[in-house]
Length: 118
Image (cartoon, rainbow, N blue to C red; front, top):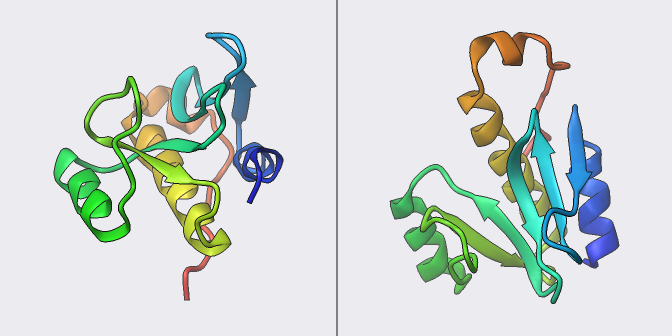
């Protein structure tokens, strides 16, 4: 996958917005909260996991590094990752951030149904 295709996946999520707060980055947000970031070097996409333990598990299982400059619960998923896995990880990060938004904000968002993983 390329940066452009990953950006298309992020853009396809309901109410997802792209910004560039640090110059040369593609930062994806929902209601102002970041769920994905592609750094200026563009080696992969930084995504949120449910916990530090899950991030460590993914690091051990796939060899994905901790996302640079992010909390330990974020991992960097290489662009070369299988397309279905990459889509799943982007949607999971999006869902985690979306669920943490205030209920009042969540009620204003369009519905979201994750892609079937079967």
